[in-house]
Amino acid sequence: MAATVMWQGKIQAVIVGADRIAANGDTANKIGTYSVACLAKTHGLPFYVAAPSSTFDLSLSSGDQIPIEERSATEITHGCGRQTVPDGVDVYNPAFDVTPAELITAIITERGIIRPVTPESIREMLAKHPTSAASTPAATSGRSP
Image (cartoon, rainbow, N blue to C red; front, side):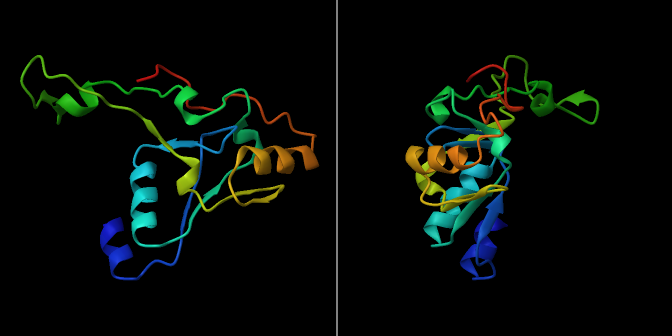
């Protein structure tokens, strides 16, 4: 549906949340966020991330270092109380994906707007208001893919 309404010109911008943001601006959020960012780029729409500054984890240089929680395979292999796929089917069921910083128009925080999204602009914004550590891991921790 997102692609259709973008193609129809019914959307002027996309705003998503974030569970963790790396020092370079790569952003982890619920699975499917990266796909929506790709669609926004294709359709020439700005893609904004709105998140508190506590979401930044400056100990992670990029999104490659963000651990991604994997959900139970049974969420995919079972439905209505029964198995819906043959035994032995491999399942990858991540709860989050990572959107690269280059797809993000700006990051909106309580401290201000980070634009462009670069390691330098992130450090500069966070340094303006040093009351928050902005380095605490967020809720995406789990096994990496």
